[in-house]
Amino acid sequence: MKEIPVADRPAPTFVELGVAAEICDALASGGITRTFAIQELTLPLALDGTDIIGQARTGMGKTLGFGVPLIDRVFDDARVPEPDGTPRALIVVPTRELAVQVGEDITPIAESVGLRVTTIYGGRPYDEQIDVLESGVDVVVGTPGRLIDLHQRGNLNLGAVRVLVLDEADEMLDLGFLPDIEKILRAVPEGRQTMLFSATMPGPILNLARTFMDRPVHIRAESGESEASIHATTRQVIFQSHQMDKLPVIARILQSEGRGRTIIFARTKRSTASVAEQLGERGFKATAVHGDMGQPAREKSLNAFRSGDVDVLVATDVAARGIDIDDVTHVINHQVPEDEMTYVHRIGRTGRAGNTGTAVTLVGWDELPRWKMIDDALGLGFPEPPQWFSTSPEFLEALDVPEDAGESVGPARPVLGSRPIKDRGDRRDRGGRGGRGSHGGRDGGDRRRRR
Figure 1 (cartoon, rainbow, N blue to C red):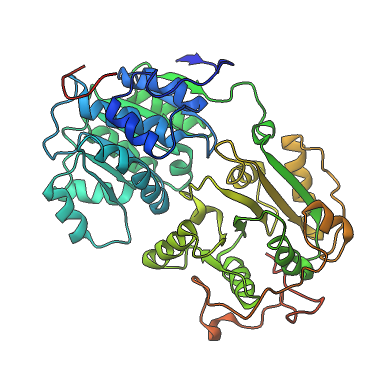
Figure 2 (figure 1 turned 45 degrees about the horizontal axis):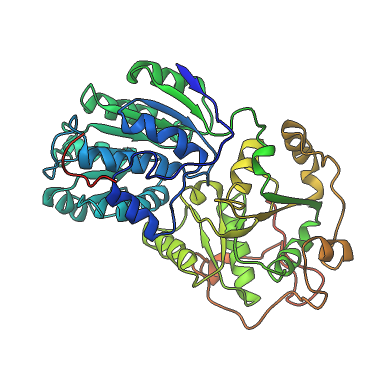
């Protein structure tokens, strides 16, 4: 596999890289004209039909890195048959949320050239997805299980796919989708273009590439940088916080100067629901996303967060996959993540697309050994975080929290993703509202216009 490093030069525009004028206009209407590193490296190769293995962290523009050339080739590449309602391109992703997000990102540019996009994932009725497929689509975005189901039923024709994308391949491996991915790869025609994107490259993913890809070019958008230095646009604040004081701490962080959309990560479904419930009780506009919620409820929560109806999202790591929002100002780790890669993925939700962000990690006293392992692995230089309380002057100053900030901001609000009252039980991590004791559970053609 040939490998191309990043060059230190001004980013070119999509126009300069030869993208169809119609697509460039659609991007420009959304304020996008210049490429990010992964796009700059991917586009010339992908537009030429080359197989690609891409590595870039979340928030570096990966979706457009494969989405733009995919749409461009289906629209106007002599090697891709004229669109006729049979899928010409397939994008496979690990989660429902990511399928929705990728679909939303590429639909405007697809529509600019008259192409139809649909998303296929579990948790939705088969009939509505079959109806869309039968009406004709050009690009399908979906999760492995539902894609295989519809293909085996005869509703999803993969025989005309000329461009295949596997996004977040390492996550699909972690979720046990590798057998389904291999079935999909065998179902699509040989001679297709394959683009594989993965944050890490474990052995099974490399074997997949060797077996099913044709002389792929390996691209790293941030070659030579450590995982920690990747997050240069994110201010990392780490301190020890007593379990019973974590919710008062979070309540004050949510009142910090310049705080916008915020994602709070919890380790379990129960603690995710609990944190969201308690923030709602304190008057914050919060919602939750976790595995115990049905798909319609999860979509409702994510849509509320994207639209700004709520500005605090509490989520588990798996449920947060696919949340691709560039203007998240704060990420808060309610508990220390399981490992360094989870930490990197979490804080990568802020400081994206040229914006700055703040990532706060609350280290419970019993979580200090796990934090030390993460700190050592990433070389962060915070092996012994300071001990701060919700009223500590150092805490208030470090996070620009007003001195008069309290533990609540108004009357209780309803919370999407909360549990029925009868199921909440006696929360050990809960203190009285307004008191010092508080929460903290353990836890080439003539179809395009050229410039």
